[in-house]
Structure formats: C-alpha cells, structure tokens
Image (cartoon, rainbow, N blue to C red; front, side):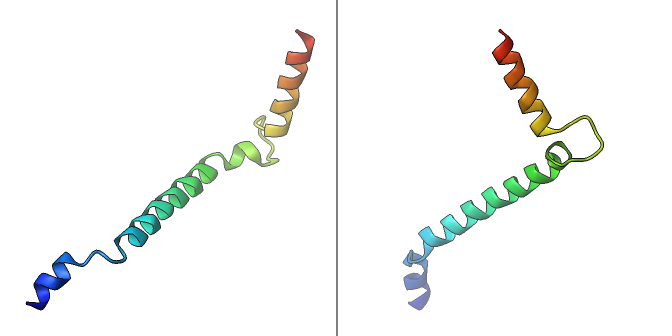
Length: 63
C-alpha cells in the first residue's frame, strides 16, 4: 500500500529537474572555458581576445 503512495508522489520533482538543468549548464560552461582558456589568456600565442577586438574595431572604423 505504501509503495503505491510513493509511486504517485511528485513533490520535489521540479526542484530536482532544475538542479539537473543548472548542473548541466555549469558543466558545459566549465568545459567551454577550459577549451577557450588559451584564447582569453595573455599567453605567448597569437590568440588574444583584446587584440582581436582592437583589430576588429580598427577594421570597422577604416571602412
């Protein structure tokens, strides 16, 4: 009898779904940051976001 009651119980389901959703978003965001870390850091590579934006602004102003 108690198992039938537990089977129909839905309290907390929405909260659990939101936790899973936000957890997935956080995992994806961390993965993206790790992939693009070298692009946004000031490493000795030619990839530098601030320089790229400056080049883009200069190109747009020259046209």
